[in-house]
Length: 321
Image 1 (cartoon, rainbow, N blue to C red):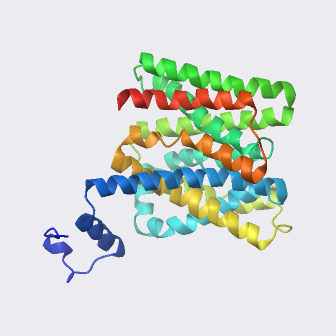
Image 2: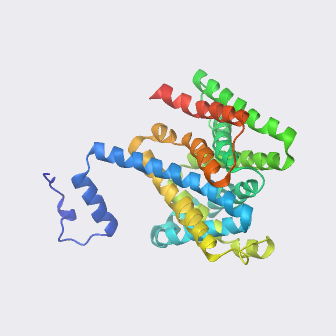
């Protein structure tokens, strides 16, 4: 393969960081088709990580660990990954953003957000979280964007939102008739969607870049962890080290850090609309893995609800692509 001529500042004789050298190799050997393939692989990895996150959390919450344990492991792992970034440029970016804004972003998608989702997983199956969380995010983002940002509403958007609402109702109301605890979990998942949608609107309103927002969430979420460990119930003492280590890797390294980086990469390479096509895959993959690992079989009505939700998330994107 013929190598492209590189600028002098990128020649091997100059000092370069490991990240810079990796970027140079991609530039030399990877064309647009190669980058697209890498982005698709990254998107598939994002779906896999998110699926494993829900299933693994549900598994441990049924065994030894508590929601507070999962939250602590998640943000400690993510903090280890983002610590070098925080040390080099993160503090400067946080000061530019402002501590109040950073704290509000962390309040919406940091420790309380993750705690609510994992508390919901103590009551409801993993597939409920995988379906209701993204569906409520899409629905609430539509409402908040309309209210705060005055976004226009198209006919396609109205059809998509209507389908998502039908899916949400099919999930929640039949569940409420039969099982109070499952309904409680479903409502927690829906509440987490409201929080994330508010976060997304504020990030857009304040023009916050993804790295700064992520650092703010991780940093501010780590501060109350000692207090949470003291006040909240914990099962760490009874859990085997293998389970704790596995959750530390899955929730912290993978879900807390890698998933964010992967999705940002996909958005940059493919664009926001094609990247969002990976989201509707999560309920389907979680349903399949949940059946195999957890033995949680969705009802026919829940499968129909997932179909409505998936259609609502995919339809507007397909109309624009």
